Image (cartoon, rainbow, N blue to C red; front, side, top):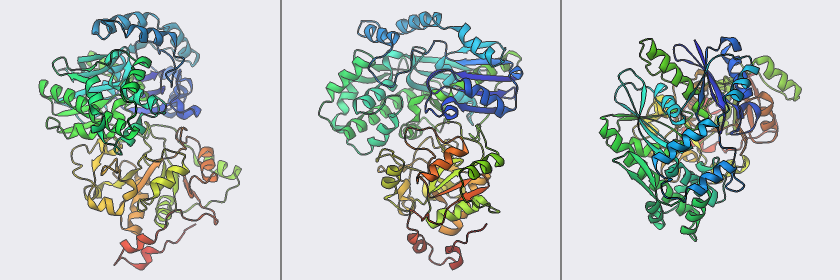
Length: 597
């Protein structure tokens, strides 16, 4: 059996899983068409997912859609919003619109507006004639979180986002048949995720795109300056297990009201207060649910859980023994979630329990052949080497201080670059955050993340035993040790945390080899890893895109497939002298890198 999961709205995408619940392919439309967070039907990614999985359209037995209601429309600003959303704004001022009854009425009415014939005709044009099932937005978040987790018993699932299908949060457990079951939910009106959009908009950034900048900014501020404003408007009902907003309206009017309440407050302090209040209310919600349902493990999905600081806070709750965040926690993961929702139902129908299938890696996207890569290099008229061990060579270049772009293997699924489409650098230069962000045209206060060999994770981070699975995917922060502060300062945020990718050899042997060789030469098993893209652009998906990045000066060297490009006039961006000082007592020959061809 092959199930196609499709999500046709914000960050649309497609995924294919088989009858055993294994992900064969997962990719988002924005990566294929070159439009980050693409909003629309995922025509190209459906075809690409089938190709990756080695399937013909006729091989698809079922199609699962993430969402029961139609998308309200693409908006990344709060002006000129679509009429449907404007209507919701107007209703939000009226008494009772924050009730569950109002959300349920909205779900029912808007479901009638869904154009099933249009969706299904789009599939038919691609040769797919399988039956289609529509699943609730938050249920798909929950199934993505649970069925890709390393957990089984005693698991609570929480979803929190801006809104989907007129809901903005949910609490789920797993029944005796292994099916994800909703226990509680929060109406769209009380959306905590929307507060992040309000603040993002009010501070001059783009809602539904730049909320991560607000969480990065938070560590630079003092929450006490305006925490009372957020405590006034953002709360939690632990009896009903739902979030509560008392701002009195929704969307544009709410953003304006919050802006007025915070007038004159510095942006860093606003961000810090929002982060703290988010941790408080989500923490209270999760803690109450964990205790009510006697769970010890926590699985998370929904856009709010892209907030790695919040995820660390939840892991530190006394009621939580371990936490897992679906690697594509936002709406881009709903295709996978929908496929798992259908898969789980089918398993239960034949008396087989749908146990989770831990998502050990996220390399489910496209891969370029060596011929395609060589053709692109030759067309670009670039000199390149083809070393016997290109991964070790990349590690050597890193140890010399070169900023290296790595394009290898299959594209990552989700928002994080995890070694295959990454920009890598020595983490020893504390000023790297400033000049590399400038080079990549990114916001100056955004922290970089580290990749580290799993065998050394405990030397650099405080207790990674809980959250170890999540630590594979850069989905939560850990407090760092003094060793990390001293030898990898470019990856340590101002609050003393870092968001690591903990790399096991089995997860990605080639990338592990890069880190291993770097460790042999530098004495340290940790590198700076950021996504291979410029600000506002999707992560590179084709060899030509990686080559353009090299030519633009974004990187000093390019490790692409089995080849390495590093022209004679390229010099290292990072002074590797401190590396020698850290290597007292190591063999001199280990400090002199010999290029191989």
